[in-house]
Amino acid sequence: MPGAPELGLVGKPNVGKSTFFAAATLMDVKIAPYPFTTIEPNRGVAYVKFKCVCGEFGVQDQPRNSFCVRGWRFAPVELIDVAGLVPGAWQGRGLGNRFLDAVRRAKILIHVVDASGSTDIEGRPVKPGTHDPIEDIEFLENEIDMWIFQILKKDWNKTAKLMSLTGSDPVKELSKRLSGLEIDPRSIERALQRAGLAAKKAVNWKDEDLLAFIKEVRRLSKPIVIAANKIDVDPAPENVERMKKEFKGRYIIVPTSAEAELALRRASAAGLIDYIPGSSEFKMLKELSERQRAALRYIKEKVLDRWGSTGVQEVINKAVFDAGHFIAVFPVENEAKLTDHEGRVLPDVFLLPEGSTAKDLAYAIHTELGEKFMAAIDARTKRKLSSDYTLKHRDVIKIVTSR
Image 1 (cartoon, rainbow, N blue to C red):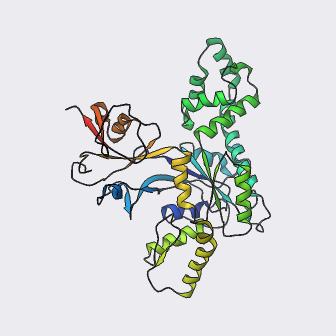
Image 2 (tube, rainbow, N blue to C red; image 1 turned 180 degrees about the vertical axis):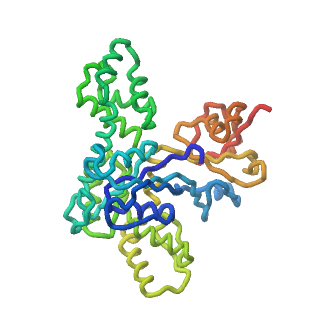
Image 3 (cartoon, rainbow, N blue to C red; image 1 turned 120 degrees about the horizontal axis):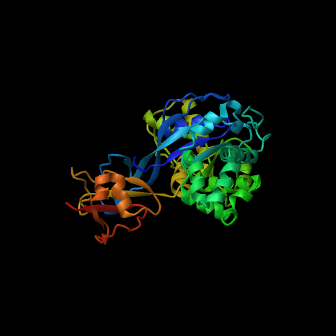
């Protein structure tokens, strides 16, 4: 989907990343309880969920690039499952550089954490509650920060002196150095301000200044959502509350059970239950064995009744809409009938960054549409919109072009 963000699944080994990936994409990936099960990054399609506009307009939609289930629209995003990271990954330990490299294009990171504390810092199984998951969040921050630090530190003194002699713009120079990480100039400018380095000459920066800048630019350009996984295993509930308190204002933390979600989606795919991802309930459709009923009872009691959902769909939603600041927009060619040129009702939906304009939407649909853009029309109000109109979430927009 044009403009759709790439989400990178990161974390140490054996925390349920591959299970989360399988649940979110229903792809058949290798899942096993030992480190480095995932050697090459898996790529798959997950879906962000939001209220479709079909109910509001009272129409039966005909999705083409997404799908709609009982008034919920599911739009695709790319999910990248990267092999588990261990301390020292930024130095190449455990093939860490390859794994970190795989997420350089990811706009948003989902950090899967074992909230039950049943895996140590290396990802080895231990007794639940004997490892503090807060350490895992801090360690991952450090790995990414140090990875970026080594990229910037290389020839930094030479670059800083050149910047001082030529008076070149630090935002421009840093953008060049970080171009491979998909970090935009605006994030670099804001990071310099937050780190208190906007007015300080680069030649006078110390290592701690570089690290301060890196921490800020990482938070701005690679936002992280925490999937606090294994919530059905004690003492996960207590650890989730501790994590929320410790990282309040820094991270979105979502209680998650990837195993429960995978079981529910597989049962749904097999026609055993009626289940919409992100729901707090499911309905049995067929007679099940006692083993199957027991498994579903466990999921209902330990996950759905206690937490409201398995958390997997919520993680994806919050990653895209809250951390990534994307919006969903429905383009149509006929604003009265809400159709495209073939008569399909609300066929497409586009995920665009917040702040995108009507003209940005035109270019996202097709370059020629952007070049010939004249105006847009709001299908709700029938109001004519200029090129710089700022799009809102769930807008339905017609693009008007010159002939």
